Image (cartoon, rainbow, N blue to C red):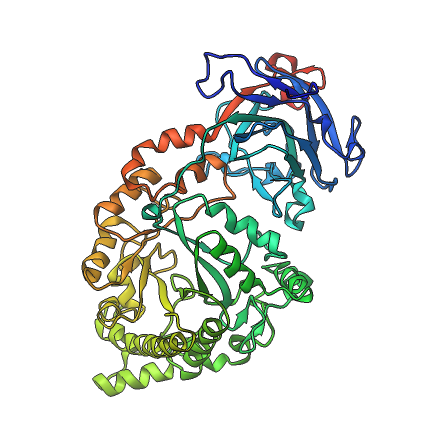
Length: 594
């Protein structure tokens, strides 16, 4: 039925309930085509064939070392219909030298967060590449195991599996490798269902993907399409940093390629966008199309800009308002410049509103979003603030303590004026296009810190100036203001204020900075318990699939107890005894680096 020695039907097993008599292994990847892309001796820009043996599976794996760009290769798949597709990655093999430079010291972040392996892959009927990275198995010796990853469920009949090297997709991935040992197919009767009522999650894309921007429709799809089979409902897609825009704007400045020319973050982003524009492709329009095809809402996201240190520039565009008009910057108590545009100046507020209106008028977005947990302060001690404070209280505010609420109140006047003007402008834009434009905003983790920066949350909700609030970690707030991490006890304050108003509260839900010992599922349950409307959950699609397998299901609030089951089903360890005829057990010396 399968034909050829590359396909092996498996017999029953008792050691692993997920591996049984109905699965099929493709362990000889030397069948990949074209054959000229493969070699059995090291040849630059070719996949190297390496025979291997293990107690469970043996065959021939193919390896793309770092700094190589071999052609894409196709592996024919048997006509088995709908299958779970598992990929075996020999991720415990030799690592490039730079990996040792980045491996953190003992007692810090786990080394398992760093990987030098990345495989790009797709089915032959797909027009975009997905990617997977393996997970580590702490305590396991190097070289001795393969990481089997559950990629996805799809109909494989009449299909081939197309494999691509990481360096062939992005410059930043040139130092990564890919070593594919086998493909395991498990026939299933139906795909997992994703009901509308579980679609509660939000994903934020900050516009920089490992120093790159998207460079094609297929590239955009690789970031968005995986969310179709998940509990994600909305994406916040970065469209501009201040007036430097990631789309062909007529109001602001298009992202330039200065970063790549002088080696300053975000490196290749301007070049990537330029490639799309030269082909007549509008990145934001394609984002809207793909997101809507995937059942997702799109909010155009605005991120603040500052100076990078060093060399004290953020070269997204030389004509950025921030670089041309330093008189519009914030100022500290001594009048010294603070490198953020101030909402105290009408010119800044008008620029921001004009960009949002341009996006609402020209793109099929559901709303706009402000990533306002970065880029603060928004109003500090600039002349308009000083004048307003003097008029209100008849005194100089510069010597007042950090927690003086009078300072917060005057700051909020400018912030609220901006939101009122924005709401009015977007209401008008919504009428013209026949579709309302919502406003979402990331805010700080508690009301006190929000008030300090001029975010009067109570007034915003009372006046319905926002539709969605996303409380989040405030990494850069003064520690004198208290706890900076987002936690359920703080978010409960937002939930209380928003009750019965129609404003949705969707806090950031991530364990990366938490110190309460909660798992991501436990934290999610705690948020649902206080009555949040949804969650801002980083999908971590660049992490091992076992993490995404949990995060994409966090809208299933009544099934969170299954988190360990979801994680376990996403990957497993497969032993390997020999590669290229060499024994890999510790006594033989190979794992010791000689």
